[in-house]
Image (cartoon, rainbow, N blue to C red; front, side, top):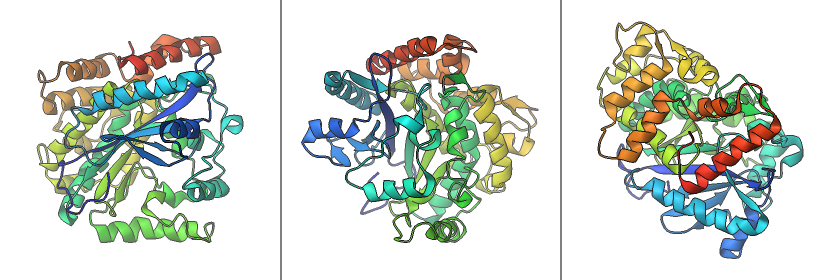
Length: 413
């Protein structure tokens, strides 16, 4: 979302970013040609290219391209079609390279130590700084594709209410969005392997990612004092030129961007097609709206949870997805499940979607959410197709099917 002259109020706008890897059609080998794609489109090696409602941009590594709303969209409902058109446009442009876009949160066969190429053009100083400090030849840097959701706030009160709601929902989101169960050609035992490697990619400076769940701070001043200043101080010893002294350095699962009055949710795995991504986002937004307006409990109740408890829930969900068991009665009460006893994350999501998403107005959304809550997240469906001990060729067969789903805008079944 771009800077606003007048800040938007809660849920008055949405910024969406979708990341995809570029691979060779024949064998799914990662191809570092995002710069060639952008050059072919506009005749220059730019970091951002606008096509009206949707823009393209580079990422840290040369095999990833990002599509994003060019400024805040008023609604999520029309975005799936807009993103799908750009998926097909990019795939058409990649044909001459025998290349295509591949979805999911992580490439199942990529060797990041041999396949990683850092973006060498505009904005390269930031990427070089990251690479120099952390060595970005690893899955946690070079092999993780996500969906980002930016939500606005107009003032400190709105920031506090939105941050409180996002913090308690974050641990549950991967149960719906996990799409990365295979890495290095093996089933990892984690439904969301992307998040498992991501949470360790900056262990050298632990304050940058924290526990992925943000600390319980609900004003701009407290956030800056408790989170941003600490990571700026900690990185300074490695960043003499001050290149990374910016809000983007914060790598928690949701980060405050006070420069543009938004909170950016960053822990959502990319799905098999934009329709699936937007279904996940609409489910997330539906629950956040309910939490912000106090549908089940007051905001003060949401604020009591420290990051330790929420991080424990997140780790269970990263591993077990919708089968993760949630037992804390105070946490379950946040979602209207007082006195219900332990619930799986899948049971909680079925309750939340029934309670917050109006059915009947969008049949495609209804069908996608039904798939996510009855047949499992994409990680579950990928494992059902590959089996627990897949060969490389079986993995390639399944991920070729996923690439077809992306091109055609279809749900993977």
